[in-house]
Length: 108
Image (tube, rainbow, N blue to C red):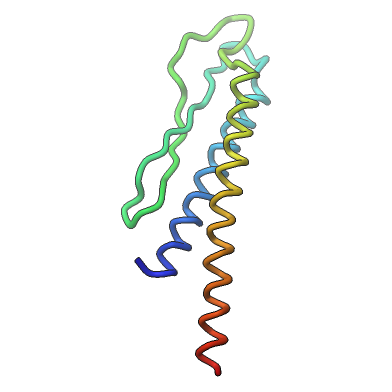
């Protein structure tokens, strides 16, 4: 696997976690909205490696007086998104550092 492929996989992971965090933020913002159906993020393998995130309503029962959003669950989702994003960002930065080393070797 090439270095650019590894960096691309890391980038797709960061994008997927951003999608998840956006859906979670939307859920938190609409927690008190009557009949709001929380959004769920599903991850799947990308065509060339990596990951894709898709967002869809949960389909769970909603309520006339509020939503089906559990704020504790949403906070945990945000924490997981942050950890996943940081892990992918670290892998991407390592790849960028390796590119810098390869370029400096090529110049010498």
